[in-house]
Image 1: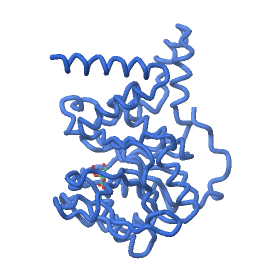
Image 2: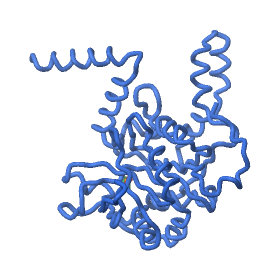
Image 3: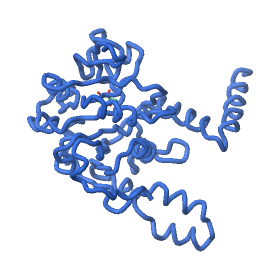
Length: 306
Ligand code: G1P
């Protein structure tokens, strides 16, 4: 069970305690797998994608997990709750290791909130739906499609950057230039301390127009002022209310730093990204990584010989 918060909330005013997980997307890129189950519940090795992302937030010190869901996403809520029948059966069979595994992943009482995005109006709109739950304090956003695999959790480094500077923070990674139309792209200038200050952002630039190849990788630390801007409900790329556009407006009055993640980023919203994430996470598992490697090598060798 996640550790319980013991100190008083008012002592936290600028600390990042809350994270928003927009999980309302339909997952049409993964049909038929996502016809009856949310895409966030697809497993990478043996944990749902959303569990990996919640783990990252937890490792960064997040205490309140806010899920912006939609219709047919009930299993996400069930996943972060006690499954009484399962626990009871495991206990009666003395499966204590499995019980401990489940208990470890379980948020404490009152540490999760679920709200619904009632219409698919875009990422900016999904984040705005969390405004009452976040309140007037800086907060994190984690897009569950994007897995960040490295020694240091991506969000942890961003929160440290925010604590030092008070600035908004956006995670980025380098993508091949031809992939820039699929992402939010930033333009940044290096500062004397080695960090990068963002001076422009564009959501899904047309081919050949991106200001750089640094794509937003789906982790954000944001000032609550973003909610006022999102509340104007202005539509951008794809006719949707875009978080990137709201950040660009906030950039006129607040500083934004880019956080270049020191690790691998997998876009599990694409089939190849999902597949590669499974391979990478399996190879990194101490208990069967070397077995996974030898099975993959055998597969490749067989195909080379045919
Ligand atoms: C969203 C963001 C985009 C970001 C991307 C990462 O786009 O709007 O800026 O680069 O996530 O996956 P989406 O994938 O929801 O179209």
